[in-house]
Image (tube, rainbow, N blue to C red; front, side, top):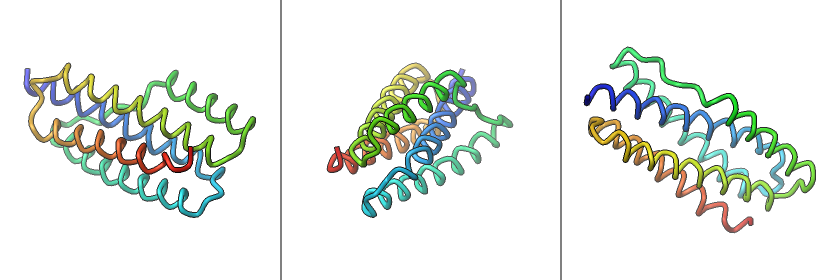
Amino acid sequence: MVEQDTIKLLRECDAGVKMGISSIGDVLGYVSSHDLKRVLQDSSEEHDGLKADLQGLLGEYHDEGKEPAAMAKGMSWVKTNVKLKMNESDSTVADLITDGCNMGVKSLSRYLNKYQAADERSKDIAKRIISAEDKLCTDVRAYL
């Protein structure tokens, strides 16, 4: 049970981190504020580090991870592009990032509760991702 829950939690973390990296990449070209751009780039780098850590843990279990759900990724892309075409501003970017962070925190918290038998290292990385999402959400509030 421990190994199954561990792999399932790591897969969800992997999909979440990939979604976060993709979402940040989708909005970076629309950012005008140098400071907001730096916040997003720093967060993207942090997510890249978390992704590398995840890949290491997944490798120990001989698992390749999980891609974000195609429907979720598509819906995110449409929402991002529609909102930014209507209002290409730092405020819109901050709003989109806030929504994404909140969804990430909610999803990963749910998976932490669901896969309680997962090992401590996988729970720790899930908590680190949640923390990174919380921090990004806080950091972009000034641009809402």
